[in-house]
Image (cartoon, rainbow, N blue to C red; front, top):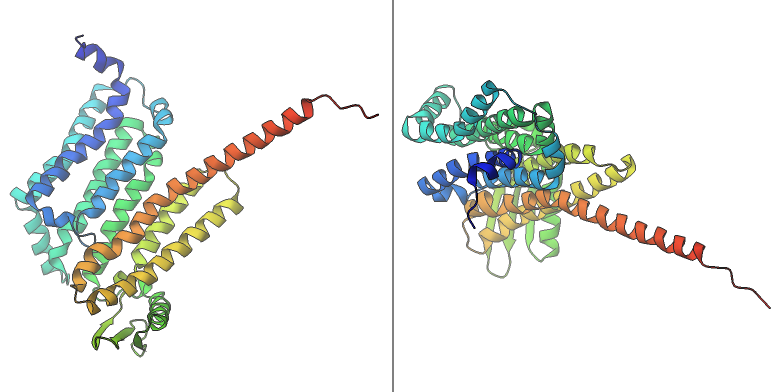
Length: 344
């Protein structure tokens, strides 16, 4: 049976249009993977967050598929369609410009001249911001202002990641003090847990908000000592969690008390994960592993995996709660309709 491609395309034009941003980012990300596979192994200053960015776009499409189709702009003009086509090509054009036309080298050189400490990390940070801008343009051209609202979570996620990378590049080693305020408490809790596990720990807080934790393994006589800065303590994950959950819970048709409960529970779990993130850094080194590998790849993976999964958990619990409530109401209705039994 032959399928009429033109007729199929016209019939499903709205659905295909909604999916085009995924293709627009799949092609350049695949290209970047082929150019530098190792960049996708690292979350911190790497491209693994780009995969979470695409995952969040896909998640928004799945959860709001029917609503998004209704919100599509009717009869877009030729100018708008032309602008959308150009916007869809922009991520690929950016990859070409950055890797073959010297754009990344120009970003590095400009950062170096402006005194950026980690100037070699700036192209990755800028890439997140640029991709967020390109996707925002696509969402606007397809759905108007409703598109920016519907896809606010992946857009904000990518912007925060890029901004955090830039902050750490400009103010390295915990110099950005607003992000250091939770680090002493988080490090103290991590030291207490390590002590409970049988390790000897000393915590030097003389440097104000930049604590130095030393951990000694009495069995192997191995020692690990590091100053703990906010990237090690996962402060960026708390920032990402806060913004994403505020945007997500704002849409949920539930009471503010329930929203507060969900937010508090999720923030608590994220904070506990970050405590074990610090513990993992020291255990990884005491076990002979490369601490940089843990810091760049494994450490950020756990809180981010939790953050992107938590909205699904909330939706699942709400759906289960709705089903239980509906069945309870149906049971009460059936019982009320049964004829009364005569006594005597």
